[in-house]
Image 1 (cartoon, helix red, strand yellow):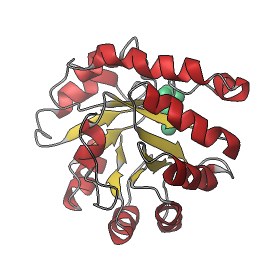
Image 2 (cartoon, rainbow, N blue to C red; image 1 turned 45 degrees about the horizontal axis):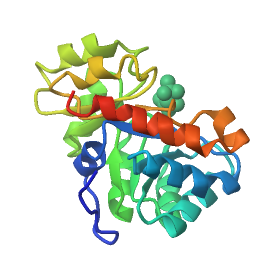
Image 3 (cartoon, rainbow, N blue to C red; image 1 turned 30 degrees about the horizontal axis):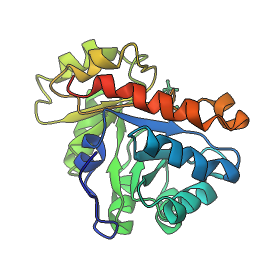
Image 4 (cartoon, rainbow, N blue to C red; image 1 turned 135 degrees about the horizontal axis):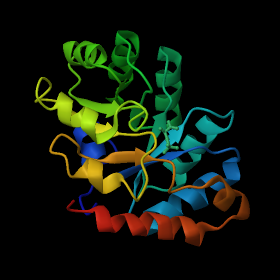
Length: 218
Ligand code: 3PG
């Protein structure tokens, strides 16, 4: 968190994962929420922000954060196609997160200079991502697909892969994941509740981000 990340240098997936214990998974329906929300997270010590491409406003939100909040590093989530990767990079995203993996998405992110955290839920998907050179992966949906026990099982055959479990992760169970040697960080939507956005309750978002400090070093 204290490390400066040069805004012009390409990031690695490991840099994205190592910055904080939690990558917030963010859904924004209003461009006006983007900048105050990003500033609120940064104030709470979380600067690696995944804005999901799930709403018509997502790209404009990424663009607004990239322009107005240089202390944050904004990435795009829910990247599923080459077009998503291109649009995310054009909007100023510096990393991408995908819910699954295809070689096309992997290549597209490389072509546009986005660090990618590819989503996997099975051994075969891990092997496909590894074949394409990806060794830092998102485990999604983490709780539904086996939770910490699944990651323990994978640590044998996939000893050289590191994970960001996402999906069903909360402040209550994050430490169970972070205690595993093959987990670098977790992802979760709990830092940015929809009602806090609607109410403009930026202090609550800052507090939720600051609360994750207890997870540092776990
Ligand atoms: C998602 O892509 O929606 C993430 O996995 C967030 O899941 P969560 O809401 O369970 O944190």
